[in-house]
Length: 477
Ligand SMILES: Cc1ncc(COP(=O)(O)O)c(C=O)c1O
Image (tube, rainbow, N blue to C red; front, side, top):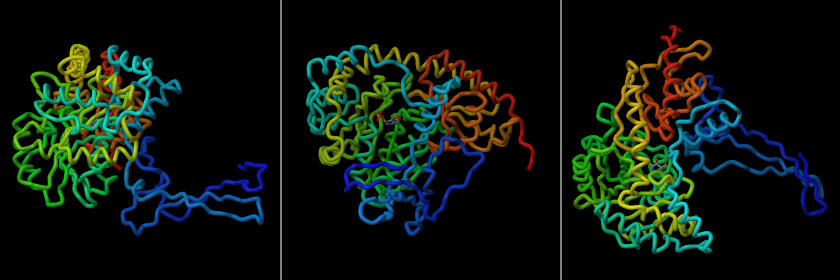
């Protein structure tokens, strides 16, 4: 390709991509199209390994023709992190739907409801009233005061507005918090199954994710003894997520108290408590904020947001609360990246918190619908012999052990070996998009998001069952 310019100083460029020697991933017949790693670079095992590197050749027309090679290799930081598999699968399923394939999408972590109208109206009014300028970096005082009120009333934790930072989503809050407190080589303790972003956020901060396995038989709850055995002087942050994505588990208060007792013995250890699914909880389960436990306020960073409970994923609004020293550090990081969250979204956030205790009726209607879908899924998929289920107590995900199907095969597809090939099979043959458990650190399971109407979830179950019934034990090779 060539572009020309009348200016003699602007070169006519001809681009050709040349691959420098370096490791290249070979084709994997079983691999899905939703790759979790960039295709042009394999992750470096050692910093001395040379990445695969592409160059763009530019040919200048001014003066004597010169070939100039531009190095377009990426930083080791980028090469060390994986893109989100949930996003990749959701995008792939959307592309299939756009191409006319009737895929049922149960991969995304996004409520299928509209933002409550009173909240949307507040955003619209903000625009109409010209409330469209930069806000303070930490968020408007109005919103931070409303957050303080909510945390006091609903969670029993006291914060002043300067102990709260509003960001563009809870993800940004978590990212900044980990960056703010971790030195290179520090450990971020993450119970598995985990939300896909936690380990990558740790790596991005040059910290080391330390994964603690939990089991379906223990409802995916962290065993305090396992935690105790893995803590070292390098352990800097323990990430807790309750209700959990991907398992829907809710930590009972007593278990959190046992964890708090262990945390209390480690002066360097902070806790990042991700409470974004707090309101999506099924009675009799109840939510306990980790910071409300004795002695934990000083070392807990509480993260929450509007995306899930208020169906506001696109508004990009979340917050973090904690001791001023840590919040000021997060604030500083944000001031050099995105600055404050959208002024319009912040007005909507105030309206969301004004809906009433735990989101009032608008949220309880959504929770009731989620609960109905959960009950249907647990019952209908529980009928499948060999499938293991831990009934979710919150969020809108079911994390099922489907490993009984590993080692089977289907005509025209081949062998199912793991969560990835099972999800590929269910997408190919059943046209249902689900997320393989290995993305969440547990390859025995797959995640079903029931953020879709009951009739959609019912149709998906029918398809899944139909696809599974034809599987047979794989022939020995
Ligand atoms: C456990 C968990 N924490 C945080 C987030 C980020 O939410 P937000 O949309 O506010 O960035 C998500 C979104 O999927 C999540 O599942």
